[in-house]
Image 1 (cartoon, rainbow, N blue to C red):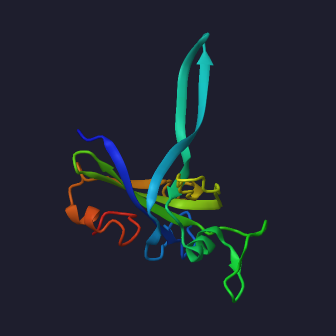
Image 2: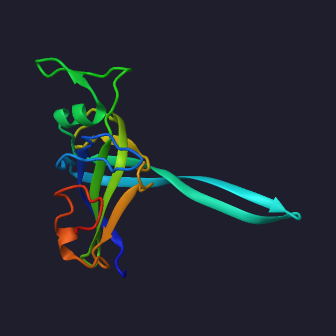
Image 3: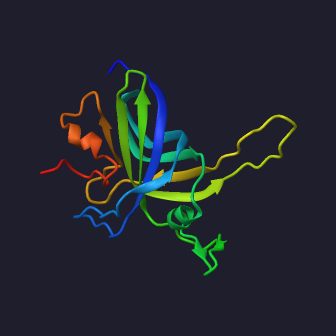
Length: 192
């Protein structure tokens, strides 16, 4: 890979429609647009341990346990927020933010772009989103500052195989159809 990250495209989500088990992967709804990405940050969370013997460190292990995800978008449709955050609403579409609301598990997908024209596609499985962070400022004179929402999430490993995410780099993927159809469904395994 010779390219350097230069951008990020739209963010997609897909609702988990069946419960996962230790022997079967979850099923996801058809992916839908969450928002146009301004910035996506994914930060791995890890556990680590070490063993010392004979006054020296003899073993050390660090393993990934999940991801923290921050997604800054141009906007998020209120109906999408209700879905990914587990908000309830009235018949008039007024939404309630409630301390007892439970966000559903979703998969989150996005695409990073390289300066050489190639792309890196992601699907992050078993994500839980939390309420959005918003900054609202007044307009000042001739200066217009756009205030955009940031949605936070955590990604957990799947029960059936421990996978956290699927990553498709168009520099190395051997099947072009995988990349071209990446947001048609949540990628869980190579096509048969």
